[in-house]
Image (cartoon, rainbow, N blue to C red):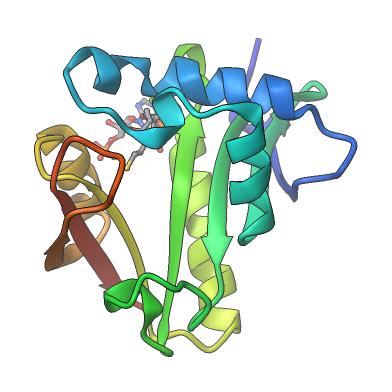
Length: 169
Ligand SMILES: CC(C)(COP(=O)(O)OP(=O)(O)OC[C@H]1O[C@@H](n2cnc3c(N)ncnc32)[C@H](O)[C@@H]1OP(=O)(O)O)[C@@H](O)C(=O)NCCC(=O)NCCS
């Protein structure tokens, strides 16, 4: 049985399976796609997974040698979207998921706490993310963790407007 004590957060390794990570992302994001929100992670190819991993620092939650969660961290000032995420004092994260059968056990909290700590160490005064404005449960999830509304963005390739949220560190 998976218990929190057996879960560790570590950086992505080149020997990890891109296929398995991509499949886990598809499984985790499927309910959002079924609710009509076409998040990139719900259908991205392995090539896109690699491209995204290489755009930042990918962390995984690992249990019994299996990857059961992930988060992609961007150091302050390294995001190129031109909005809040790109500000020099703002770190951000994306591609955030936990294996569906292991959700609601605090693994998401562990992954977020990990990048928030890293952002502080990197000198960021804010950490941000974005999600669909229609995903009320996710907006509430982040709000409960101190993330506040910053701006709306319409990203290419998704069929919803995104809400950018940020937390002061
Ligand atoms: C969003 C996501 C990554 C969160 O991961 P998670 O591991 O389920 O998150 P947590 O377990 O830390 O917290 C989720 C809820 O589980 C419950 N929970 C957390 N730890 C718990 C525990 N030890 N015992 C019982 N319940 C617990 C809480 O209700 C918590 O929500 P709350 O603290 O806001 O009330 C996950 O739901 C997911 O992969 N979703 C699909 C993809 C997605 O939406 N990604 C984000 C796109 S912006």
